[in-house]
Amino acid sequence: HVGEGDDLGWLGYFIGKSKCFHHLYIQNLPDGEGREQQMCAFMEGIARSQSNRALSCTNLGDNVSGAIGRALGVLSQLEELSYGYNTLGPNGFSALGTLLKSGVLKLKKLSLFDNDIGYCGVASLANGLKSIGPSLKVLDLKDNFIGNEALSALVAALANCTSLEELDLSINDFSMATAGLGSLSDWLQAAVWNLNALSLRSCGIDDEGLQSLANGATNYCKDLDLSGNNSITVLGLRRLSTSLQSDSCRLENLDLGWMDIGDDGAEVLARGLIGNKVLIRMHLCGEGEGEGEGEDDDIAITPAGWSAFSPVLCDTSSV
Image (cartoon, rainbow, N blue to C red; front, side, top):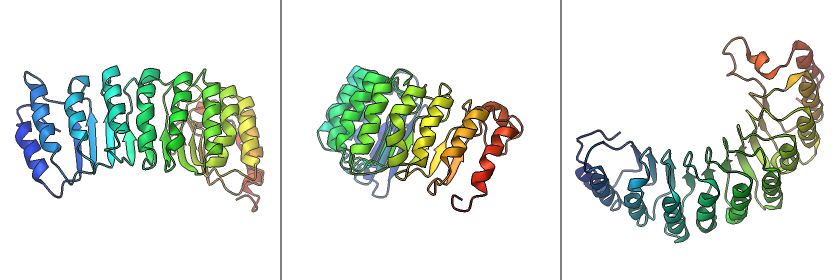
């Protein structure tokens, strides 16, 4: 953390001279006059670093994005970039997209959480994502006001992300994104690679959305997080259950916490586990495991609902 009164110019100078500095984390700038000038001087030093592999910038705002962008333009060795809680505007996204498109950066991890990206931001980033696709392994775009149209545009941009292992789109609004989720499922099924982790936590996904997503997500992901999607009912869970029974199912970890599963949903999920030899963990509790009473209430499963899992748990061919 950089506090008020620190000479950022000198700090940047010494970081730039270091040969063993690998990760820089910047959170909040000092207040007062000259903060932008200090940040520019600081980033000029960072730009001279040849050892830094990861840069995290949080709560800096849009007014210093230019200085950071200029530094990124020469940090060709950078592998991880995290730029969250900065409320990037259209100009910021446009500049970032241009930078990524230039091919200077060969990022393995890109995190842009909570930046209010929306459709315009995704459109600006699209060409950049295509450029860094072959090297990118982790993409985090959670909490960014991404809806159906933006999701479809993003999926198109992911076509070249042949090394992607983790995709986090949590806390976006997919309540009206049946088509976008269908595009995501098609992308997963058409790809020649398999995604390890897909997080869609608290995205407002409903039964139609889950039906569009299920095949691709269960057959081409190892970890799937659908927790907090309270609009999913037993109808959607029935489609998910059918996918779990498929011989093509690849899913090892499934998170359905903070959802109104109910006894009917529990019974449907239990049927989906019959014969499934791949799934290792299914998380259903609303609160953290072992945190006390109230967990069953959050997901509305009574002892009768839990009993539906007994035959599966006692079947050695599935356990």
